[in-house]
Length: 144
Image (cartoon, rainbow, N blue to C red):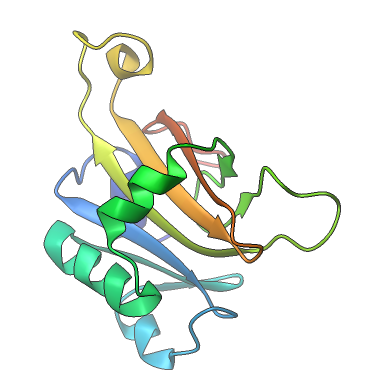
């Protein structure tokens, strides 16, 4: 895992966003210059405004509007941001097309997961069209 993605998932890059773009969704080899090649696509960690603009250019969606829509449905986004499990999966193919993620600093006043540490917010869209969200405490990454 790249240093930038590790730092992001550890909650050390609150001003940045992370994007996963599946190669089946965006076939643009230039993306590899900006991110890290992973199984099935590319993960990019970049400064917030640039990342939101890149997300919109790649998907045609406003990042924060997409996040607002995806918040309505809980699912599971892979803790390395390179995939997920669609809540509508019924045994068929339900591959993630893209993920948009950001982190939020620990906030004891809010309580719950936010009191426990920094939080990763991740929003995904499945190839079936379902948008969903997941969140977890930064640093809670398998294999780290």
